Every structure is written in structure tokens, then in C-alpha cells.
Image (cartoon, rainbow, N blue to C red; front, side, top):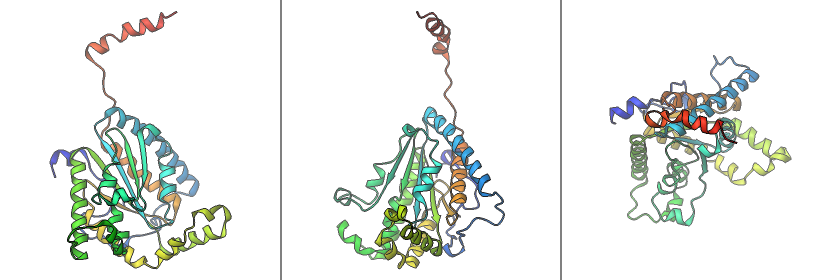
Length: 299
């Protein structure tokens, strides 16, 4: 990785930052807030509000600076709170400077391309924040758990599955390395929900009429593959957590803590980019007095 990029982008420090050495273990990753997290619910909500306000300021600088693009990737099991986290954390961002894309079942057109195509065409421009609600990682998560989906991708000379996943990890890692070299700051979040908490949230969706619309029969079916998903997440995260494209495994059983942790990480990342408003100088600055006088003397 070129030193110039490493100097400009560093993974924001966090207790949830996944190591870059392949040592991450899902079984050891907490789903609840750290024991030393002392903020009460009201205080955490207040700090989240301050973070959201500061994120708005940083986004304006990002747009004016026009050197970096920022890509936020969210992956999680169903009911972990991806939608709510994105909605709360990004609520202070100017909609003109942010774009959110959700990636569900691939379309016929998307299946006619390589597996990175559908997300690559939605990457954020310089000066903007892009949010992926699910992403290219679905191809090494849900497709790994359900390899029968590969049939619709019409791959020539499909290698053995173990080799296929390793090849896709390599493609993702190289793809993200390329984006980083060219000015995209990538931050990836795995919202780590416990199986027990997912069960409670599914029951809430069934028992509360205003939440019925959130419930899907397929969500319960996928719970039967929980261990397979955890293995897929562990392998994918270890294979692709890099200094220029870090993963953060954020506890998701407590939504308030999760949203605050995500906001803190995004804010620290943006602050680390040393964004600034362009300075006006030379002949343009010299004519400001003239323009000011013209405007003030308008009739």
C-alpha cells in the first residue's frame, strides 16, 4: 500500500476495531456494551445528537474539500438495526451530500455481470458519503450459506467452493485497495447481534401490530443457518479487514449504544482526514470588496 495513502487515512481507534492479522473470532466478539460504558440512556442520546451535528459539519467540509469520497458499509443479521442506525446517525447530513443504497436479491441485469458490478456502479463521488445497506459482501455471506444461488450467476468453470470464496475475498480486498488508493475512505460495520436478541425482536414484530410489516417468514428460516452465517462472517471479516478498509464489530443488542459507537467511529474517521474549506485568494479575493460594494448599493 502506498505510504501516501496510509499517511492520509488511518482506521479510527475503537474497542470494536477488528485486527488486521486474521485473529478475529466471532465467539469472542461482544454483542452487549462494554462494562466500562458508563453513559445512561439519556446521556448517550445527547452525545449521539452532538455527534450527528458534528457529522453534518464534517460532511460540508468533505463536499467543499472535494478530495475524498467516504463509503460506509453495513452488514448484519436480520433485525440487527441497520436501517435504524443509518437513519439516526446520518440524520444531520445534507441529503445532497449523501446517498444510501440497499442491496437485496440481484436483478437479472446484475446477474449478467461480475459480482462486484452492482455495488461498484453505486460508489460515492468525491465530496460525498455513500452508504451501503448490505453490499458486495453478500456474495461471500448469503451466497456462501446458500451456494445453490451460484447457479443463477452462470460462472464458467466454477472452482471448488473453498477456492471460490478465497478468490472472492481476494477480489474484494484488491477492489477496496484500489478504491483507497484513489481517495475513497472505507469504513465497514458488522452490527453484531446475539441470537437471543434477534429472537426477541422477531417476537416483537409478530406481537406488535405496528411492527408486523417488518416481519418476513424467510427471516425465521435463516435463523436455522445461524452457525453457518457466523462462520461466513468470521472468514470474510478476517480476509478483508485492512488498515485502508477496516471492519468494526459493533455490539448490536443495545441499539442506543450501537448507534453512538457507529457515530463516534464515523466522526473520528472524517476528522482524521483533515478536511478544510478551500481558501480563496489571488485576483478573486481582490475583487470581493468590489462585489460587496455592488451588492450593498443595489436599488
